[in-house]
Amino acid sequence: MGNTLRIGPMMLWLIISLPLQAQTQAMDEPLHLDPAWLTLIHYQPDKFGNGHTSQADDSEFFLSENGKTSPKAELEATLDAIQKPGGGADHARCRFPARDVWIRKHLDLPAAAIECPDYQEWKNTLNTESVTLVFAASYLNSPSSMFGHTFLRLDPPQEDEKTNLLLANTISYAADAAAHDSEIMFAYRGIFGGYPGITTVQPYYEKIRLYSDIEHRDLWEYKLNLNQQEVDFMLAHAWEIRDRNFDYYFFDENCAYRLLALIDIARPGTDLLGEVSTHAIPSDTVRWVIDKDLVADVHYRPSAATNVAHSLSALPKPNQTLAAAIANGYVAPNSNEVLALPPQERAHLLDATYDYVRYKSEADNWPREFAAPLSHSLLRERSKIDGVAPLEQPAEPEVRDDQGHDTFRISSSAGQLAHREFTQLTFRPAYHDVLDPPAGYRSGAQLQFLRMDARYYTDNDELQIEQLIGVEIRSLSPRNAFFSPLSWQVGFGGRRTDTGYKRVLTPYLEGGTGGSWSLGKQTQAFAIATADLEIDDDLRRGYDAAPGADIGLLHQNDDFSLTAGAKTKAWIVSSQHRQDQVYAKGNWHIGREFSLFAEFTREEHYDRYQSTWQAGLHAYF
Image (cartoon, rainbow, N blue to C red; front, side):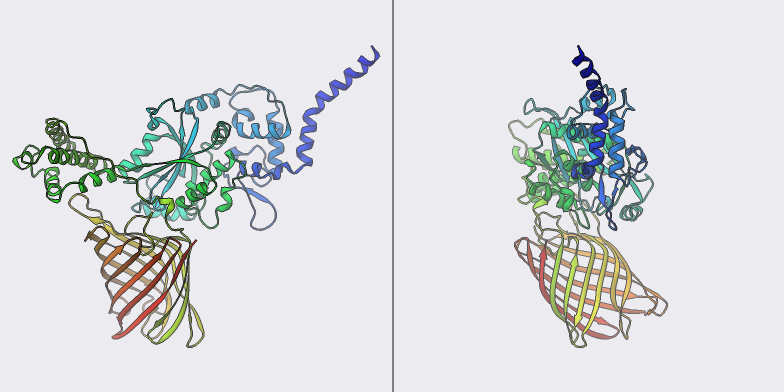
């Protein structure tokens, strides 16, 4: 009996002290510096000092007043909060289920049951068995989509091959931009962190409608090999950050960056965020996910535009002309010209034209009073032809977007400007120009940012910055009877300008618009009306402006790319003179890691001629 009296108080003391011992353990051991905890609260090391700061910019994400900058304080506050009695949506265990699971696992706390109806209903609605990383190809007509976009698809259990994944949900992160902001304002504020970033959940079919049906963007689906426990933990953290603000930055803390963090949280130790340096290009992040052996399968989903273009290109040339005439109302689907075709040709003609009319109705808002009767007529005529299978879907590209050349490029070259010899070193963090290896990139598309060309002139041992490109975009999209996209370009930065008596580094802004036309499968001609603005004290009035034109040819293939043409500008403010130039540039691709390049220009400027040439090597990292 005496032993029982002594043991009873001892057991009671142990029961009461267990939470205190666990808290002491959290305080004494550096659990708050565990990489998994730092990732879970989105901490990053401070650039100056040895502390940490969370990238979350929403006070509701933290349980400690100092949680933004103190991993230890946030851990202690979370530990205290999850041990409090009670339940419901406002309890810490229901607000932060991933933190709760992680802390209980590491501190061996009892996993007492708790009612979290909102979280449980959300999780049941998502009904997720596996996760697929989806990459939407680049779309240069929108600054928000120039590099492509990534999001996660939450796949339900695959009971059979007929399971409709279009009804699956998705998790994505994007800038919460004001609806009235222009594309230029979006680009500016996106670069400098002017928008909050929001994590949202949407049905997959809505994403397909936006990216594939409207924005002409092919989708690549990369099924991740996460197990059920990892999937559940990812969803638990997605619940924690839903509707929570994280400042959005176009080049680094963007859609791809946040998804890397989710994958890092699902499978600790992958350290995908450790791959990010100055920027997180979506196609690069897909490469990193593949390199970490996280992908089980890949599936290609062509866009509506790709499907339509494939169907039309499969028609014989005369039938393509006939399809355009039918689609524009010049020829009826039951005209003699159509009925004279063999059944198979007629069926394919009607199928392709119907697909084109539907696409234009969706993407370009063709009037319903025109498109609906025409679609009905096409279907009626097609129904009269039996035994002809529709055209096959477009084949998967031989090279995926993630298999193209790496986006960071370093170049070394030697050349001559007039009679001055130089060597040049170029750094370009991203992304692609029209002469780089084209595999895995959009034909005729160019997007460069933060490029620097440094030259060393050997005649007088002078080192100069030849060019600083902030952003340079060019989109050369060939026009035809069915599609009439504008070709356009825009760029800003600093460049060497001849003022007539010296070359100075001048801030510039340039743009242009025009058209391009296919001369073959890999060659196109283009004509762009341009406008240039330069600002510098060395100019007579402090600035100069010039309308102009750029006319040329572009050829791209896996072995070499080249462009040649002529430019003219008429400076009309300070110098009032013409500047004419002919140019030829070519790259010989050595795989996707290196390219040998050569450039030549001949220019008339201030009534004098001078030539520039250079040759060297591009290396892609």
